Image (cartoon, rainbow, N blue to C red; front, top):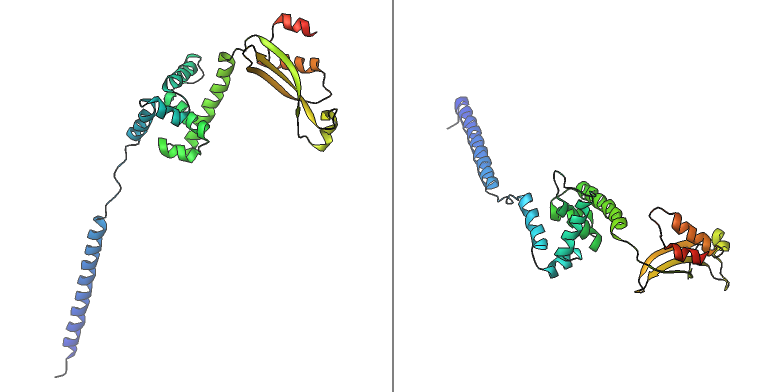
Length: 229
């Protein structure tokens, strides 16, 4: 029996209704499957950072030396020296210990800023700024802590590789290019000062005067200076 127009319309409407229903069911199933996917657990960055620092500074000296190339006692002495001389202070987001720890890990093992940033949960910019701040503080601390003891000075010639246009100033008696180096040692035969960069033709007195005139440069006893003149 042939279908009437009304029957055809009802069939089309029924098919469309079934399609819409199937689409909604499919979307509902997909949403449930998506919502059931497990997400990464929440990370407490401050807690993880504190845990990492404690593992270094509250563990054994062997582990501490392996991580920052110095013992815990020396580390805290360094932090105290920087604080005591007003060279470094805690910021809003970093303590002095954390700043020094970051600096030592980078300096001791030539670590990339990105790697250290992931360990301390800091941005690369923050790590870079921290490293530069501690570096400048340590350089200033050098002139406060390092006091060259009494000793002796002398000059020596060391082989040097210089541009062709400057080789005449560095040409030695044997035809090789050398630089005149001023060195000072204490009575334990340890170097306390070195100044290089002068050419072969430079007189020892000129090199000595250069060392004495430099900011935070070489200092010697007046008796020794008198004997050199």
